[in-house]
Length: 363
Image (cartoon, rainbow, N blue to C red):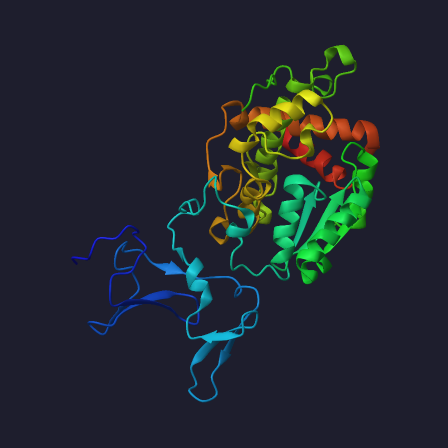
């Protein structure tokens, strides 16, 4: 079929209309030939819509015509077009087949545009400031219930008030719970309180990963920059192993990079860092842009079934060779369990299952 040129392969040719069936299958109507088809006239691919209607929308039947209509209660208007068509995704042959929809300039609110997260719950650490705050605010504004896990509850309540001023209903979706990630006993208390019982220049290798490497016993052996690099590598490795452990449970695990030297409170404790962050600020992401990738990983419909993947700028990218080392990931997991047990014994939730799993794998 000869079609007029277009700047976008998703743009429909003149005379075509995109529609959706009750079960979410997208079809295309050609008003010139009076025909319909399931495949996009340009790409030849099929699409579908899934999930709930956008926030504030309702599907009804017009009593006079019997036709399905969509009511936008927020803007007080009606339409015959399913608003989810704006977010239709191509049917994919493999779970990892998905197109890039966002990039480094995208914001968290743009990623969530039109999404209704009512009935969803998110746990956001460090949610009282910086990227954590923008993540929590964006989710709450779209109906998500947000647990703000913070060490400073006063700052967390102030953050909730800011969200409430922006959108009262969003503030009601947020609660703050004390969590100090430097204290294992605090982590355990936090877990029980919300009923969760039921590559950079890092220097970690399979040979030297030990409790002393991860937690030096003296200041002389500690270098803050190397500790930071190692911690980021550990985040990716831990996510890699966690995705394997949870694969049969159908839970997706992602690691991601929010952006370089984003202006947050990370540099508040050293004047040199504050100067460096101030210099590069015009060239780095805003907090809203930095929150976009975590928001995308948490909410994107096309990522259903995907797990163990590393994201940057709202798209999958390759980790460093060290971050893809399965032996190193398993060693980190085992040592993490040992370190927790050395402090909490077997009282930490879930550790008895980990000990059993380790014994089974050894045999």
